[in-house]
Amino acid sequence: MNWTKKIYQGRLALLSAVLLAASAWGVSASSVHAAPAQAATVCGTGDHGLLRKLQAEHAAPGASPLSFSDVQFLSADTGRAAGNGFMIGTSDGGCHFQEIYKGQWSFKQIDFPDNVHGWALASVKDTAAAYLIATADGGSTWQRLTDKANAFDRIDFKDSKHGFGYSLSSTYYTKDGGRTWRLIPTPANTRGAEFTSASSGYAVVVAPGAGYRIMKTSDGGATWSLSLKSAFAYPESGQVYANGDQVYALLYGGSGMSQTSYSLYASSNKGKSWSRVIAQDTAGGGPAPGSGAAQLTTGPASGKPGNMQLVGNSAAFLFGFSPAGEKVAVGRTYNGGKKWTNLPAIPGYDGLISFTGFAEGGWPSGDRMLLPCIVRGMAVRPGS
Image 1 (cartoon, rainbow, N blue to C red):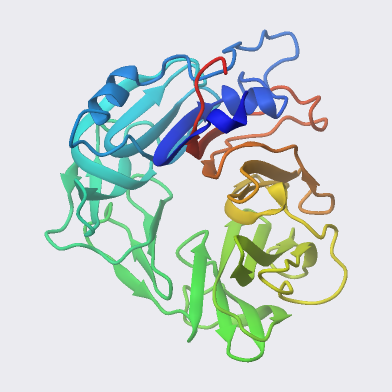
Image 2: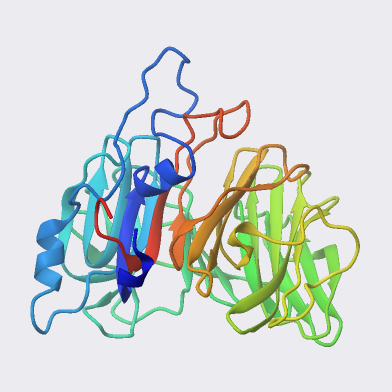
């Protein structure tokens, strides 16, 4: 590719669901944990003309550029991706996509606990107000659950009835599919939370001038106990991820010159003990939060951390992106953070990952690893 001919389109996204990204990171799509004799689905590389009709519509005069915002896979075969006014789906691991929805809703986040019931945070066209909407037919039709916009930054439904809504400092719980919500008490100065059930959860708490605290509850927020302390002079925000026995704390340092400092802590025993996996210092962002030894001094793509995906009690994946370096990458562990590996980068500026499983035996020999991903920000002509 002649990089002097790149097309910079900030809101255009390349959808790489086991296509471009899978090829570049040395993986291919098939069912997770499939039998060794089963042939892997071969999709090839490039965008395969995905969404040409939608792209043409969004390229019309006065139309907003086509923009992906979220991707979610339920299995190695079944997944969805959504953006401004559309949702598409695949049933063959990303080799082919079909239209599920086209209309007024611009999706910010989608969340499907099964292939029928789904929720989304979405706005009407290009308005700022986000509403909680729901579907009971896989995403073809949507119903707004409230007349007023909500304050959720993120939603996480565990099944067709029970779920959580998160803002920066607050957590809410529903047991009727999102029609009514109950506030869960969280500690003062909470800057991110994650609940695995109505009773069990974790929160990132800012201690001004002192650093970060990871707090834990087992009684639905009635009481909280200290799980981890990480010293830092100017704590601002973080995110905690939890699944089964695994807990990860992503704590941000400073940012500057398109660089971000951060630390990633891992626990494989529900927060009883922690190890520092990544401690990335940067010239523009300063030191990473915390102190002591870390496995790695840089994260994936040596850039900013994106979203994480936790699978079972042992596997975790972190997306990383470097806008200045024009690259994105994934880091991963198969053993609860005891050994972390950052994988080679591919071109891009930003993105999202969605993992549903992992192939035992290591990387890249585990060629049945599923890697659906959105790589944002760079338009690359097929075959270039």
